[in-house]
Image (cartoon, rainbow, N blue to C red; front, side, top):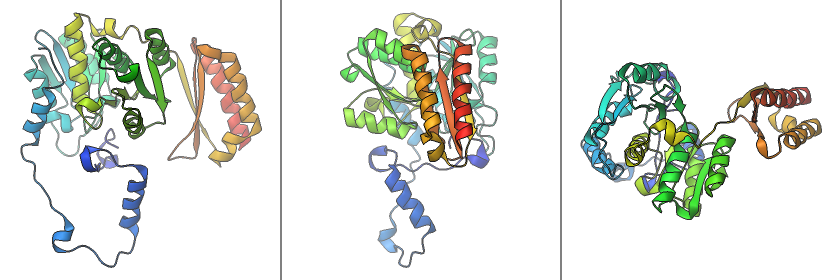
Length: 345
């Protein structure tokens, strides 16, 4: 994955229109890689390679659509994760007028996401405080994620960024159907903030591809994930962390507000996540005792919290996630359900 260090990083394949591949197409490619294929394409049937040497400049021209206001007077620290953002994010933010301090922007092929970027925020937090910056922006290896650090060193995650952008787009008449698309992992605080603003939240499975599918299906204009994948179809066919950073800073300039003030409507509820190892994920999740425990938890939490059981896609694990107004309540409820899951396998 693009947020992992070099040994666990890889390639990403896009289809026509710059869209991520659907599950079926990925499965077909994987099957072909392992299959014994007799006749392979030759000559013109192989296809073509196009060397887009001017890709950076073309992309920077595209980014001019994302920032409609000059960002003069704004100081931003950007963590480029020693990845794709290194050559373009500082240039893009400077072109828009911001004062930019770039860190972790010296890729050597080995250091991508190495204790930096969107999954390691300590160095960004320290730099924001040291430089007295207005904010910090963290990208991952391929720069499709953006997380923020406010001037106080506090995290503004993808949920909070979506709240800021949804309110801005609704104000500008750009939020299609007054709807935001988020995944089941978004904090209940996002739902409460959107409900208070009269904005509908459409929920999908985990993964930006499912957000993209829902955006296309409903012709919506904003969606994303807590992890910082934010998608605005009018500005691109997939998540773009640099576009997200530009839109976030544009909103700060437009309102004259700090990032702390803009993110205030998003009050993150305490969240507890417990991973329970099981022999059979389907059997454990469907066990009567587990269903009873989940039902009891839902009854206790009511509208003030939520519980989510989600089988891992890669491990023999069921993830028990609970959100509640108080951390001790979330922990107690999560422990109870996790014990039921553990006893069921």
